[in-house]
Image 1 (tube, chains in turn green, orange):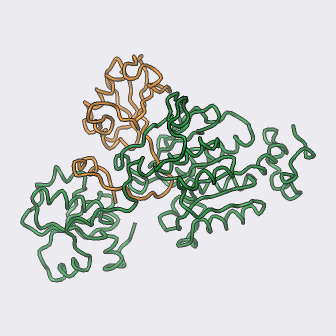
Image 2: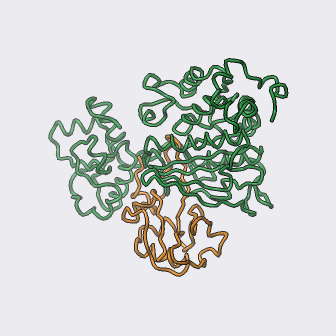
Image 3: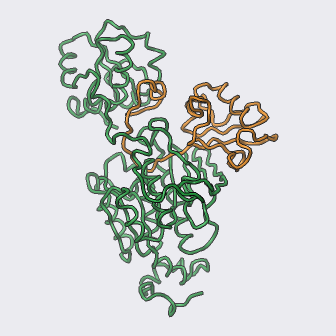
Length: 389
Length: 113
């Protein structure tokens, strides 16, 4: 075991730090040696969101010396249900500023490195080289593959966590002999086939559960203690409260870490994942009506049939007293609609209802319009008392 | 009868069931039985030419079937098959682009606002 005299000068603990980390120092698995390893460690968290919140807080509390965070987002109200590093007062602030305040207050000994940028193929390698371990708290497939490939190419372990509704996955990828994310999933799903959290929802505690598992794995890697999740995929089902694990193997044919590598530099991950644009294009190419125009028609008692294509649980939150047919049921329930009437279809923001309008037009409806901006636009511009979600 | 574990993103296509018992001597037969019972699952698990999709991993107990005999892997009594699709969530992702209308049924079944 290393002694204080052997430690790198910058990793020597002050008396204040010794007191702060005393519950670590009296554990043989950490001890002075381990706490100095933590202080010397440099961990980069990708994202300061659901997974990034508990990750950064626990890593900061544990005394990881240098903590980097990459994020370019702003805190909004819908984040607060799970992104516990941010508070109500932070809404509208940059997530990095908000996170930095909490981390500095939590542990003034931290060396914080904040990167207000989107992680891209152009900056990832340079960024990762400055750190020892990368913790992936991202929320989309292109960035997942980018983080993985950049970790393999720079030789940095990728502490992985991912969530959906009430299920999560965690593992450690890209260790020296271990599998990488591409060994597990060589290809991403085509866009649209797997719903994201914004689409499918997520139980607020779930990123806490998975993010803390990521923090645990990160700290174990730094300490060199225990059995890491490398080579294992942990599946967490919060509803059944079941933890299962599956064996992961390094795929000899893996294009990025296998024996015959075809990916030796970072690629265009948006293209790889089939994303043609970050913004929702729907609604631009179908006949539409504004919320103001709809209000005018309703006030004039015009014959307008409002079709709500959201889900029943969304209808419960707020509605325009429209006729509810969830988009998924529209094809089989289309006969409930009258082709001769003027129909205004709406959803939450206009995406689903644009698909509904497009579908209905092809099915022979000629007087069907999409409510631009959906019920949120109505809440913003017509009825400020309406709850938004 | 083997039991197949359905992950939450796909439960909307399996009558909300988290696990399904289906007959089958091999993994391939059990999966065929599954999509016969729940036809809506088919396009999520298989490509149009009948191959299992690359982002859907199938495990027999804790072992990836790619490292067993794939769909020809023989099942024993009490074996559990798990379908493990890739998920990407971590926060609030950007919205995805639209697919062509031919995918309408796929798209229509998800919420995409």
